[in-house]
Length: 282
Image (tube, rainbow, N blue to C red; front, side, top):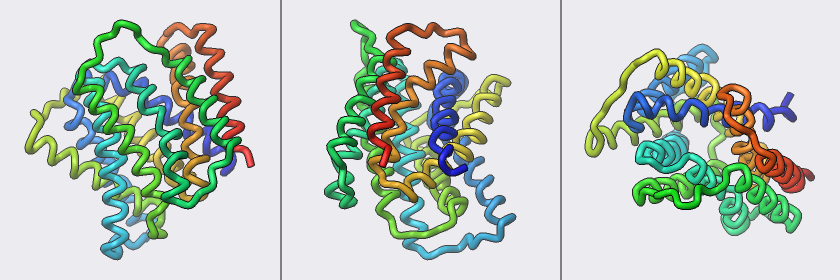
């Protein structure tokens, strides 16, 4: 079962890109994310009570998990949602964030003392080339400056949170750690709403369906799998699977949204698959 976790993660995480736009259409990004992670935090809290996990933990463990959530659920997702709301083309935003495995590989050596082999580097660069072919560039597209800045912040945040999650010392049960991470994300988005943003949510049927998908399949499902993979594998190998997400998202959009799937997309998917295989095999 554990061996198929990366494949389950890829499918669940990729599906989030299909429901992000409907959420942004019916809310401001920070209100949507605050609502999402409040529900997620409550859900993990109830699960911890059910499983009789210890909720009150050492202050160090709390701060480590809380800060990880601020980075991942706060700055990363907030940056992506905000950039799209400002008109950043989804493909370009996804391509910038897809640089994460390259940054993680570069930093995991000096920070985590992980040995990144030449084979892994080859796989990572193949993965990025394949992802770039799938996502492509809209030549001549006007890129909003605020959207670009937000996307770069998201890239730095997801890279930092991955390395931080691997480095932290706590051995908390995943539901407890996930609860405090969700609380960290909720807190950051709430502060942004209070001081900077004008909160707005239209609880339409479309919004509720899209938000339910992101809460249950992505936050409860995919994120828990990701935390497990980071905890039990090297950071550099774990993040290499992210290269498969753009191609998988394109395939899902072709199946469910009747979007076109070109020969270039298929070639990119094949190159990415080869790259991820090279980067992750022992």
